[in-house]
Length: 214
Image 1 (tube, rainbow, N blue to C red):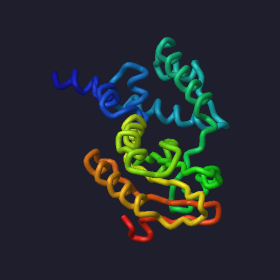
Image 2 (image 1 turned 135 degrees about the vertical axis):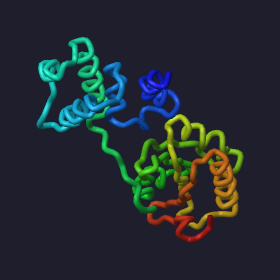
Image 3 (image 1 turned 90 degrees about the vertical axis):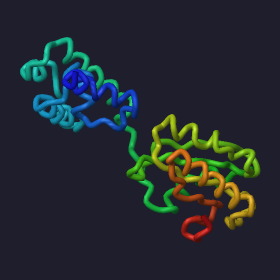
C-alpha cells in the first residue's frame, strides 16, 4: 500500500497544492506516468536544457533515454506549449515599495482611485496584478472576499495592497488605515500575509509599512 501511495504522490500533491509547488522531477514524473526515482532527475536536466534558447531536446534524444514515443510526445508537447505561452514572460521581483510605485504609474494618472492588489509567491515574485475596485477606497469596496479570492486562485503566499490618490497627496487617510487593518486581519485568518499598503501619486508614494502605519 505504501508503494502505491508513493507512486501517485506527485499527482496528489498537484491536486492539493497546485503545480507551482512541484519540483521539475515531480512534474516530469506526472507527464511520463512514472514515480520519482533516480531516472527522472536525469530527464529533468535535459528538460532544463530545453528551456535554454541555445539547446533543444528532441524525440530521438528522449527515445535514447528509454522513453517510449507516446510518453516522449506528451513531454515535448507540454514543453512546447509552455514555451509558446510563457516563454517571453518575465518574472518581476518585488524588492521595495518603489517597485510597486513603478508598476502603478498608469493608475497614478487616473482621476479616480484605483485599488490594486499584487499577488506574490513566497520569493516575492509577482504572480498577478489585479484591479479590485475603482472609486473612493472604503471597507465596502475593498472587501476581503474580493481581495483574497484571487490570492487563493493564484496560490499566492503574500500580497501587497496599493491605490492612487488623484489629489496628488500620498498621505494615507483614516479610511485607508482602517481598510488596511481589516485586510491584515483577514489575511491572518487565511494564512496570507499583507506585506504592505502603498499609496501612490504621479510624483511620490508612501509605504505604510515603512511609515509604521500597519
